[in-house]
Each structure stands twice: as structure tokens, then as C-alpha cells.
Length: 117
Image: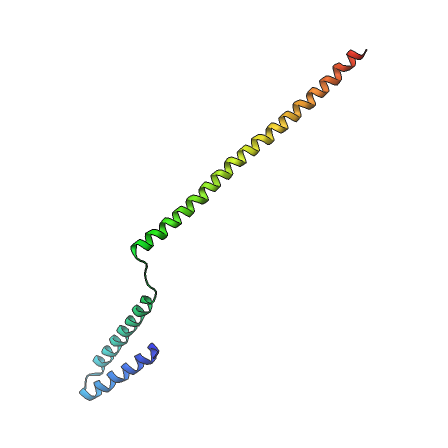
């Protein structure tokens, strides 16, 4: 049965009991409210118990896996940063060598014409 229907049935039972024993109305309402609250608390605890909590060992294993995964990502980023720096260094060296080669070519052309004459 659904919790709502169960709460209604229990509330009706309490109402009948209060009439039978001639319990004051305020007391009867308080008992009904407390009973319904307790019923919902029990249903909520049973529903949350449906999902089993991990054991300490399982939790620690999961934490270790997450830490290892984070460590792998950090290591990959560091490796990528090192490779990026090496590529940047080689590109700047290539540009420097090309600039020096062009400067030497100009100088050669300038002085090569003196040797021909």
C-alpha cells in the first residue's frame, strides 16, 4: 500500500479509537499527527535503506581510484606542458636560424659582387 493510504487508514483507526474511549478532541488530533509523522519517518528511513551504503573498504577504494585518476590527469597536463615548452623552444630556434640565414645571404650577396669584379 502507498504511504498516504496507510496514513489515512491509521488516522481513521485512531479517530475510531478516540470516539470509543471518549478521548478529548485535541489529544486525539495530537496522537493522529504524531502517528502520521512517525509513519512517514519510518517510510523515509526504509526508502533510504534501499540504497546500500558502501563499506569503509569500498569507500576507501573509490577514493583511491578518484585520487589516482586526478593524479593521472595532472601528470598528463604536466607532460603536455613540457612538450609544449619544447615545441615552443624549437619554433623560436627555427625562426632565429632562418633570420640568421637571411642575414648571411644578404651579406654574402653584398660581398660576392666585390669578388667578381
